[in-house]
Length: 477
Image (cartoon, rainbow, N blue to C red; front, side):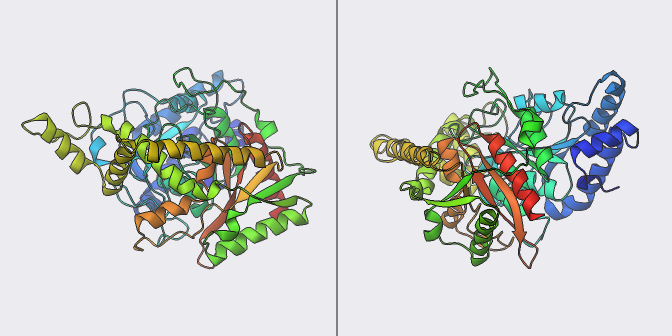
């Protein structure tokens, strides 16, 4: 039985009839991991013994349950910047080698409370800094749809593991497109929730005002289930907002959005895009128009500055957040005679080139004499971008964009860091504004590389995104 093709609700029906048990599902996915891990390199650590014991524990609990929790007996992968107690959290960096988490992240606690089975920690760009999945101490992640190409980043392992059928669903984190881009490259769904919707307690911070944990899945119902489980107020996170979590049936409404107006930003007509991406996006607009959805071009005057604004803010916050990794308290420690040499050698050898590049730029942007010219000005433009989007949502219900201007590059293709930053040109505005965005798979190339698009909604309107995606899925299948 090909379990990865089933939805969670279909697996639960098999559980109810006694056709399968959680241990059968775990063993199936462990087998899939062993087959595809040498190809994808999506895992940093597989929790084989833990997952088997967890499955047996859930089987013993079965008779005490009146109904199955949303994730009962479902294998879940966790990006390796999210803490799971008793296991390593490396952020795909040498500097955290040997570190074991002392506590569970809030999202992990909620997954366990909902019956989920954590299968292991997933590969990523180091400290979530990257768009391709290449900046990892443990090696790049390959695209399961075509292993000659990359899976995208920074949640590279989260996307590849789901697309390859190594786990049923996964968690990623999105600071500037890090869920949506790899989800699109690998042909799955990826949701960046509203900032404050999902607790960040237990997430290793990259850029605290931008980071958000989100779900990734092969189908919408599974995505919705994981989103519901991880959402909700958490007093352990000062940025968490006590906003109502929608019910599953409300998220899975597929009725035609009567009177819906969808906008797209004028930057799309100016941006450099792969011809295949451009044609595919035009097809999305055509499909929607054919179904009676009104399409409107939006003038967003400040969105063109998104990449530059994001890089200044994200690098500045990273330089502050990553100061804690000094070799004194945890992780890699180089033995030196004095404290300064210990710091220099530990951080110099422990961090990868991209992380060091961002720390240096961020420290410069925050330094005396340059703070106003760079960081403060970036914050002001960020506010203008947020206001542009808020004004746009007074004219339209949703905004559609491509996810990336390019197709997944080949593993051995050389891409300079600046060009890589612009791969998230369409993703970053949602992070700067703190609004939700959903990557939707649609179309593929002759080489089997997935394509897709994304939809953005006003804050707290994840239900609108999922309803739209459900509607779109129905009209194109």
